[in-house]
Amino acid sequence: METKEKILKAGAEIIAHEGLRSFTAKNLAKRVGISDAAVFKHFSSMEEVAQELFDRFTSDCLRRVERVVRSKKDPKEKLEKLIETQIRMLERTKGILPLICLELVRSNRKPLKEKASAVLNAYASLVKEVIKEGVEKGVFKEELDLDEVAYSLIGLMQAKAFQWFVRGKKGRIVRDPETLKKLVLTGMLR
Image (cartoon, helix red, strand yellow):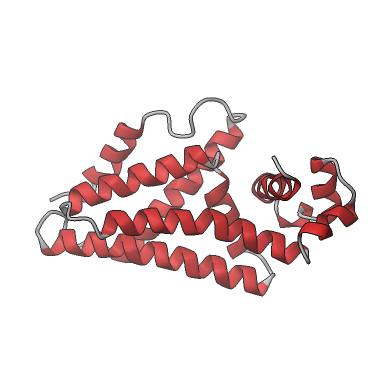
């Protein structure tokens, strides 16, 4: 793995596991086995490292979610596919994506906070489209609060990642995806 990729991987782990306070050139360099100065041969600033990390994780996730939302599937199938997509992203990123989003939204680094908020809102908007379509087609309950459902799905994935870290990062993040999908859908279906 090239040094730039090692820096990004270490950065993601630091942000997700230790928070932005530990996200320093010194800590990155130590994890990668390079000097602090070597970090800045690949990135102009720590802000740039965080931006690239965030962009890589979120752009892929949003692309996949948008593909599901724009598919010809019925709303229930779309929601199931959205949950499956989230679970795959959780497993692939080892839970880092939702934790980075949470950490950046809580950050006092305004550009990162705004970017994280924008991505979470874009994701929520896509989920709300599916729920609204399902309500209109009589698949989902009319009384569903679209914002509540969309952000609850985001929170659920953050909770699953947090739970996995608390368990000592053992096994799959979502042990039984089918049961998780059923739990979500049960409260929404008519």
